[in-house]
Image (tube, rainbow, N blue to C red; front, side):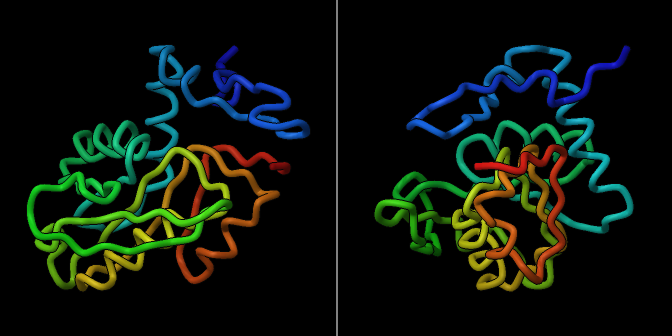
Length: 175
């Protein structure tokens, strides 16, 4: 019988705090069949989507986004934590559960009018990818699709991304 991506996801109860069911992507990554299946399933969500380039958020967006870009013959744009990119950047600060974070993209990474797909491993509250989408738009790009491997529906991250075409391979109802 064919395994599904969720068969490779390890769930750790009560991490990082009681009541949380932590969905661990490392168990998917370390299994060659799990890794291949997850990338294949994410690529299926791009069937029929016209786009120029893939952007991925540090760090697991790189893990999934770069091989998808390679397989589809597209470029890959890293969305990095502040201070990691060597050339001129644009940056966006966003809210975390406790405090704020900042991400950056090279100013010349997106050409005006480019159609961009954003890839990441997980949508929880949606803050990181909302900030990435705003940066792409600030540079004149158009976000045509956002693809996640996993979605924690109980954290309502999709609400922050209303107005975007969002798809997930796996949806978990809780947090």
